[in-house]
Length: 424
Image 1 (cartoon, rainbow, N blue to C red):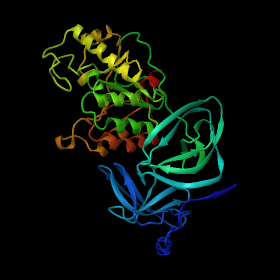
Image 2: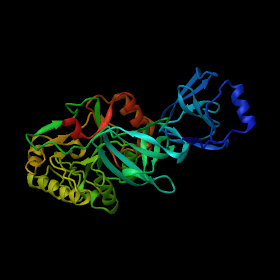
Image 3: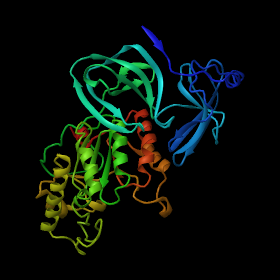
Image 4: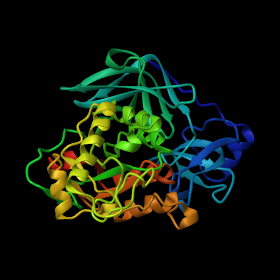
């Protein structure tokens, strides 16, 4: 078997500069000094190493929102993984570890194999990806392996900072499969599930979810602004984050809402839905509403109005996703009481979900809302085992907060998953 790496050599002057700095990388690529690197919002750490890869200095900065910087090299630091040598901005001259929060956008090939080599697939559930010319998700394919298996891959690469292998035979021929690490030929199975809702049973109210096993729920409401909802859902698919969504019927009935719900419905292995009423009225006190207030009574709604809000929303959600929202629901504005819960229970909704971490991502920065880094930090620091985190598909900086949030939660040993997986 032969192996041909795709990395080009650095120009002699740049390589000499690296040697003077004490770092001798195992490989360096690409050769240009104008590589574009995306640094996602959140904490970023730069390093300086000696020739053995020992850290000489480190520098930590919080990036409020994603930025692009230039880099002069991409190198493997012995025992520490692939790093990017930044050539502009605050981190100029420092190495930052390549990851889903610091990466060269698109495809970077680490190795090409001729002939193709074997990759291990332990028993589990897998999601394969096809990408378009801009390296955005074009399609996916899921399969469950009941026993350990293998497939051959022709390339090992990093796509948007995430390690993948290109499969050339079997179930995922033509698809990219996530790898456990950039240097190991072992496929990464899904670590979360969407097993189906728990039964209706008796009424229950949840803010922290019982039964969690190093898990938390990242939940998203869809009751107003819809941009960048589709981007958020696609990022959750790319990062294999199982999620529970609470759409309203009114927003789900819009063209963009329909498109978002269809993507959610196409991924039952990752996603599930609950009910957020039809018009997003305040069911406890009256008022509220989205996209307008015209359909909401000014005073406390009647029980029949509340039940109708649930059933009409459910019809939209089922039609667009093929999923059943009952018995899960979330009260608009978190405004519920025993009377409201009795009214929604009459329509089949006995499980009421609040939250214990509120990102307040619906508020723009100009009006005192959080930056992407602040959203990521709030969740990554404050979430606990069983947390129910509230976010919105129309959150102003939510999309940019997700990479740091997910990476840091997983580093803490907390797996983001569906409400149902935790309750089961």
